[in-house]
Length: 449
Image (cartoon, rainbow, N blue to C red):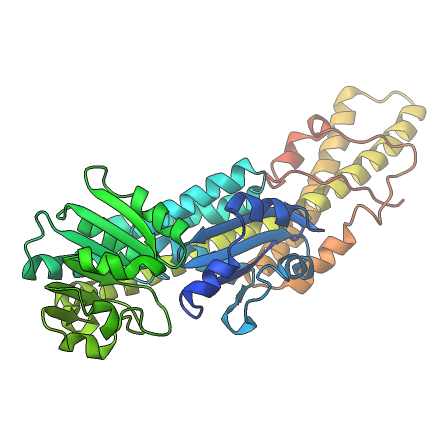
């Protein structure tokens, strides 16, 4: 961690972007994204997370401008209107909200905390995790776990996908049935997972067949699962007893002509905007439900989770305050450490000069030497106690002008060691001084005579 290690972040997510834009924003892999970011000038640490509904990147730099520069062009071809930018504190808060499930399509869903943990491990093995991101991500994971154990954020029907499966089970005998899930994003994945237990076969259809295949292969091994592209949806419709749509496409994916030969089929549309044309419900044998029809299944649990979400937001505020206080203390401690190092070097230099003169003037006992050294230690401690307290107060009060002025004052590039004085090793520093010094690693500093 440098004197001013700052997190900068950027992201594209389901909140404002379309599924297509989220897919366009994704790098080849999370590891590839981290490696690219680490190659940018000034980047000390990097982290990336990519899921069905988000693609986000974070860097740590000594200067915020370097961070913004490293993230510029991260999402080329994506409208700036759907790209979020995060400063240091905003990044910390957002990562906590993501891990808690507050920024998910379905509030409180459990999958995201595993996705954050996996992305953290990927970035760590790629060399992207240092002290700053380690603190941030471990705190986010900690808060995500607290949210799920101390509140009801993930109780009940935790997704529209599982609610759709419950509705289907209430209207159809799913034993031996075939379910078609259109869409392989987060909602489609959750719907496929919920339907895989009661039905015999699941077909996953998606604009990108590879994504559909990924979802299909992730389902329960006892359920037959296949993947198709949207160009094969006409045939898949005729084989399905239950259809759940969740694409997020701007226009209907299933219209009257697509469902004309579907036969007795239950269609549940959980997309917004709707995936199923309103005229589809006029086809004999086809029953269409949308979000309004399944609302009763989720109202009670959604209400409980809304209350839990408020509690989780308070939890995040509390943990963020702690993390920011820790960050501020580290910033202040670095300057304080430099201040003590400079004072110690000056003391050693002046002490050597004084003792040499006293030795030259006659017999000087060890007891007298100890008295002089003890006095020097006491002077340093007493003189530095007030500025030490002031710097810590400045950090707590966000008085960064004072902190930055102190950083410049003790900048090792502008200070030189006293002539003829060798570097002082930590073991050479008296205990009286060590007790006053912060635990942070001491910077190499020197002072002019």
